[in-house]
Image (cartoon, rainbow, N blue to C red; front, side):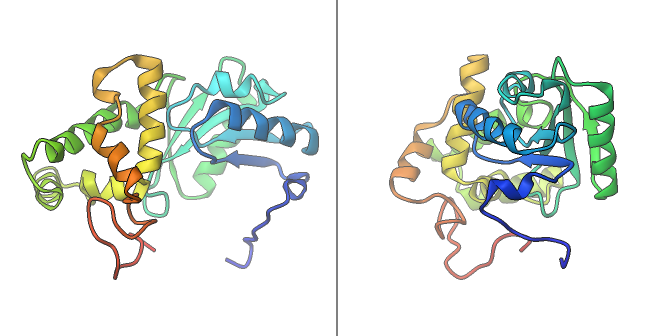
Length: 223
């Protein structure tokens, strides 16, 4: 941990070899950030996005260096999961992709190569799957606790869908759904009304102390 340091000044990224963006799922916000970083960082610096739904090629188009841009989706919960979805954009050079892949391996992660498609591999399945679980709660089919227990017991998952949603946050889930549905028009990717009501009630998940489960007296999962 002694090698890690925090900052709120983008100028501190000027001498980095790799910069990984992890802001929320908004293409204009990502373009604005990378436009600023492009003016600050050295020409050789590789830019990467942790996006889980937005096209890498589209993000790279606003980066000023599309050949040195790559998708690196560290899957949630990132402090526990080893999977990183590596996605080249249409202009990503082979050298850029290889360098980013090597960083993943050096960090002890398990990279997989995916094409630049909506949701890549994991969220292509996970967003509709989690929405289905939310709709089961909406319809009164089962409680969040019983849904989590069923999925963990039957499928061997470390976390149930409701626990994962609480970790991700309802506000983030809404953004993920909007991004995925906006690209694919897949009905199962559309944001369930319950998510919007929970946001209005500040039941965002662990970050607010309550989501589908109550976290008033518990720590963040894996913290």
